[in-house]
Picture 1: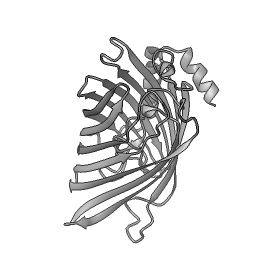
Picture 2: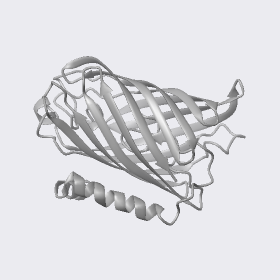
Picture 3: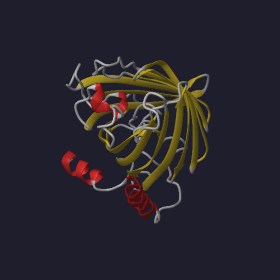
Picture 4: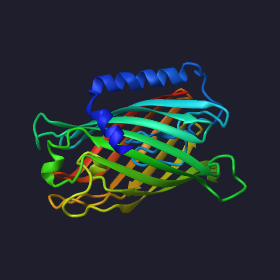
Length: 299
């Protein structure tokens, strides 16, 4: 599967690939434009690799608002820029089938600032997620969370420019994760609280933007992540996330990532997210933090 995806990426330029995927998104949703019947915000927002969840990490939630007899979908765009002018632009979409299966795609473009002037790194990520059991919202009479397993196949288009020179071993990597998510109604001062825990097996350097594996470590490592969010109103969430990351390259130390976010859902069709992200060391620059803004359309 990975070989087939890598071959497809290498023979299709970015513009053509995005056109094909956009047509696929429109085709899937064209017969089901009304928003699904799930509650507002229960599809989460789109994380940096294209899965439904928080900004940093996947959750067990399925994208869109489709119930067990509906198809839901989400398209998103995200921009982030660090204090030393690294910048990232993300775009993609995810489709949820029957609130059970999610298929996603994201394209990341990372500008290298004055570390490598005028250069950028591009990455494609294809993802799939399956809800295994539980319901994050409606199973309030039990402590059992919604649990989902997922996979993300990533291909670094510009691997030979910088990642390989830094000691990364390969351009393509596969992340596998297990997420547990639960929404506790009226848990704090009458307000809803969402908690998530994710465990991810990965070889990715800087989420894959600097390749996979390295001269320091080239085996899969289990990395934990956690999220907590408070619903101030039915349409406004504030929260925080933490995501551990492996340290595979001798050339620099990779730090764990953390964020504080606020997400606003004025309707089922629209969501806006703003966050402050602490990314730690990136390549030759320490203490990198960023503001990012993300918008998404959902059906």
